[in-house]
Length: 127
Image (tube, rainbow, N blue to C red; front, side, top):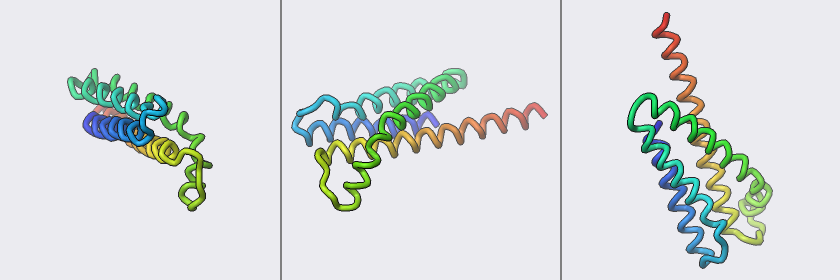
């Protein structure tokens, strides 16, 4: 799970930098995916150190992913409009926020699946 966290963090970092460049630096908010991504990379690297560190880092990454999902949900109406061919005010921002939503939701889903699998494995080991 730590490697997946680093991968998604890297993708978000690149997304943030590219979206900032595409908007010609008009808004620092275009860097939000990059900030999230950098935090995921750090948490993924910490999670690769030991079992105890992995547990804490992956729970922190899941909480951060949840915040990323909740913070990006407001893009859904604009994303729907963009995907249906209508024009939106800031298409780069809509695309970046939509991709941030998808990547954070993917990481959150994978983290929850991993937590459930770890709990099942622990229960089987105890039995």
